[in-house]
Length: 218
Image 1: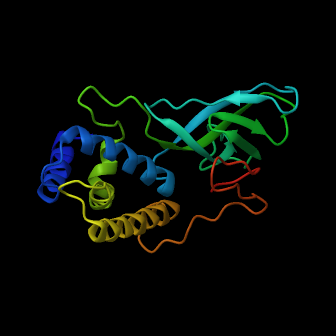
Image 2: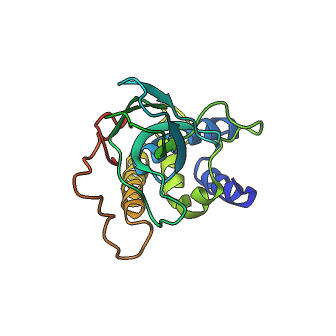
């Protein structure tokens, strides 16, 4: 995260949460970011996976993110396009019953390189300064949503100087609405008035959590 962005977020939260300590707000921030990423899918990664031809059926392939994160769900799998191709290759049916463990609907007859796109969320432990790790652009773009989530979680804590049930409900409603909006933006590739991306015909959709269905995005 950029230092200026996290400083602004925490200062805005302190103004509304008199008496709250930074370690307590940092712990709630972890929960907020986890819910935001799982609900929006905005943090995702393309991971290349080499699959040998004629592997046994139902072989499980381990997929690992290159960033300090946890894989939340499978979004989709495509053939890696050739050097002369543009865009995505052909869609590949796959499932991820356990995050990070990919199973193909059918095994290739020859060696293949697939591009596996996964949605990510935050992981423990936090950084040495107590803050959770995630890309700097997320806080820059979605600061208001994250602030609403942090205030909503903090104000729901019972018997604290900053407890406020009515305001907690207000902020959590805004947080959930903004998370849903972020998900819609992601499906439209952050393009104004753009329709959601149309997946190739016959590319079946997966389930919403864990990508347990064969095929496409959630």
